[in-house]
Amino acid sequence: MLYTLWLLVCITACSPHQVSDDISEYSERLGRVLDTGLTAAEEQPAPDYPQREMLHSAPAQLDINLTRFYQLQQCELGNLVAERNTALGKIQHYSQRLVYERQLLAALSDCISFVSQQNDEAVLELLSTMQSWYATKQAAYPEHWSNMLVLSDETRDAFSRPQPAQLFTDTVDIAGQLTLFRQLDSYLSPDNGLELSLEAQLQVIGATRLPASVWQAQHQIATRLPTLTAQLDPLLANTACPDGSATEQANILRNVFYLFFIERIQPLGGHINDFNYQFAPLLNKWREEEALPESFRTFLTSQQTRFVAYQQAMQDHVKLWQRFLGRCHLSPTAPG
Image (cartoon, rainbow, N blue to C red):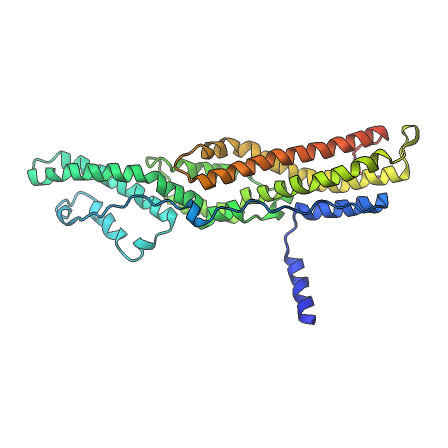
């Protein structure tokens, strides 16, 4: 029994603070002031990140026999294929495979240029074969990019494992995160560089997990705040403010509104807005990107739809308090 109690205390202590906690406490405090039971709606399940089998692309593979290419010492193609055929090469992470495919395309291009300048008829016979390989690899490249973006451990964490506490700080680097995601997007073109930076970029994205954190917070507000707003509407309308003068109860209600909504929920809402506005062009681009799986694009669409619901929930709640505070000639300023 004591062990179970200790375990529960530890779990509670380790649970990260999130906006649903503030909404619950906000409801309880208002209910005490109004001498009634106020309940925010139970949080609805957020959309799950798609399963691997719905996200994975299977790029076309080539069985390249390089026996005849070992005579071409000027080409790096042989070394690259040999590297791919090692045990480690066959279990490369999606990001490492993307880098490999970029290097392979570059090596094929170089080798094609070299062979096309030779006078050796036997060597020239390889030219059309290599050109065919290059076309096949170039066509398959976007699928490798898609796997990197949606299935890397770091990006999966960024899209599906929130760190809600970070949104309650003033150090959320939304612009910096956007830059990292734009760089991942730029790798859709195999001609862009920065290959050596890819792993470092993914590590920062996976450690921060900003998209998932924002999406969780906006979902909690969108699904829980409207019920509280609907319950408060008649209660605040019936709170006495004779001749427009605030009573003690009205002042206390204003204070609770300030301490919980203005001080806690609204600043977090600022981060949610900033993220959605700054990331919108990139997310809209991905929603139209045919190289990405339909399940991922649908997932992004559902998150952007929930942002609209979040905006409406916040707007309705603010208008409710504006009516009450205006009627009682109160300002939503700091208590005291």
